Length: 146
Image 1 (tube, helix red, strand yellow):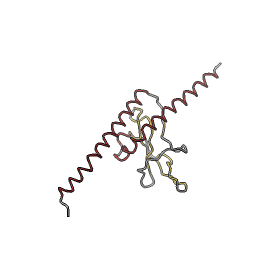
Image 2 (cartoon, helix red, strand yellow):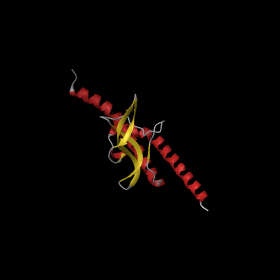
Image 3 (tube, helix red, strand yellow):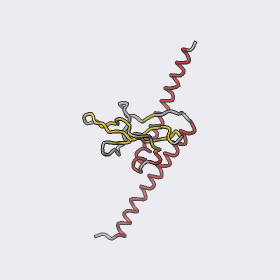
Image 4 (cartoon, one colour):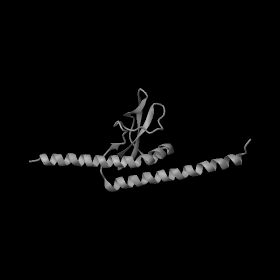
């Protein structure tokens, strides 16, 4: 039988790398939010999978999951999560309708922040693509003006 001291030693060995990973995830979220604020694109966007559906983070539970996006919350454009229904089409799991409002990713659960931090580069790339797409629309519209 193990002693409490042994169990606490094992806990410390497991908790330290988790704390480091969480610190790194929090720093990535803060950097993304600072970059979004500095560039001020003012565009709501949600990370999507290859089929164009909103990407569902893997920590879904009980028929609900979280999507990752950029939205204006608390008077600031920032990286956010938003709960959504989980849909099933055959063996394929996807994000359905939104449930509730967007929330700052910085305030999400540790599990959500850890998973989402790895997806931030793709989210920023998606935002950049959307900026280019909207700029092209604006330019085409300007060409039609007599």
